Length: 158
Picture (cartoon, one colour):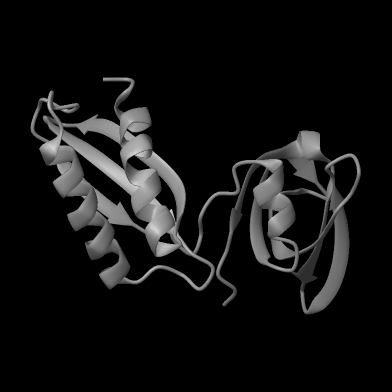
């Protein structure tokens, strides 16, 4: 079963290329007694429900037509956007988020906090983050060492 995401990526790539979409991730997981094939897609201006339906239909047809069946057990196919608060999984995604509002969880406290939300202003040569955050109605800049970052994701500013 471990090769299912790779098989799906191979089948999916030409479909996504045709529609000018990007692949964010593919998961094949068992939850309770059911298998789920989850495909996360994106494009610069965001994914619509119609986009998900198109990819779901085309991918489903391609997978159903394959012989032998690459996924012999029953499964649910879910196609969606990675979401407005998607994780930033690598350095390229972090650097492309400069100017975006982010949520950063830390391994250890900096200035007595283990969580910060703010605008990512810069990623320096050491991959440290510089964010601008609101500290009791005063905007401050904070440099967060890369080694302190446990998780980083996009966030919605309220």
